[in-house]
Length: 466
Image 1 (cartoon, rainbow, N blue to C red):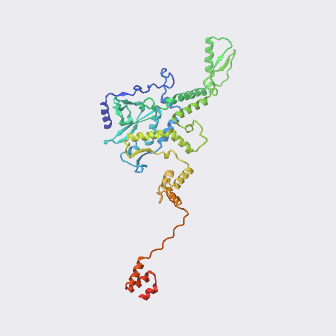
Image 2: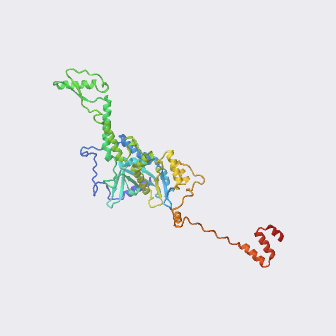
């Protein structure tokens, strides 16, 4: 653990740090779920609302969908195209972020921390040459941003055994260069992200309260509470005796038994029934509110019906654009900066092809259209839509022969397209024939005759000459 010891010695030399606060021009950091909740000591904690099924479904859906995307190292070529590559300095940590997590569980924890706490803190562990060899998602409740008087940012860490911060680390302050910080919207301070639970926590508590009340209601045999009334005045002792008798004989497991009332006693229900309280409507409203705060389509978490229009691909595209894309870009940029890839030809990328997967008919049509338009080669279409390898002759995009470029069509139209072509000139006499005739005229009769006979393929003349 020499790396963390070095960080400790650096941190102890930093003076003038102070925790983040709401002072200095930013909004005050008093956050309450409703007006006056702070005075009543009422708070909404992530643990209390995670039991709400809609909150859990929204967080798990986003984290699970992003967690299943392959985390790739890519490199930009001379044409500006990013393609997957390998590099011994960066690829190992992307394939295995730390000793106990896979990339899928690492990303899942990253997003869960961001969605529930508003902040994700990732501690970098470096090797002897300064390269990042491991990444640890920290407990956000044990991390606090610090700001020095000169504006430098540091982070205060408390004990976290899985991240290597053991019993000998009660309070460790590290510079911002050793922390990857990904946060949601930050209206109060740029270093303090705000969880969506700040907006939908009260709706989640309302839904939990409705469910708890319904549980008690159905545990009591679905009979509401009420009062026993008498036509005349009764004493306190009689009232207590009747109440104890009623609770003993006609509540709990005895609900539903026949009660015999005398002396003009009358039972009247007081609790509002589920239908009168519009229980289902209230639960649907809370679920819709939570989905809206997390930007998750309600039908994906069972909080609403599937839209009757559009295709599955269109619905997934909407889900990607309005919900997942900002989180994916945030993870990629945070990793690029944390691994020191900014300004280099390398970068990180989450492959969304595993997210938007089409049915067989749609994939076949998309592949055929891509090949037919010349946008994709057969090998590229096979790999992209079917996960198949290359074939002989499949590396080149193809177009039909009758297609012409605009430049060729423009050149054709500038000339007279109906003009008759000029006749081809007569072929010039072969120089060899002229040389043969000159040789014949020059006196070398035999050589000239042989040459002329050969050129004219006059086999009888050739035989007579010989």
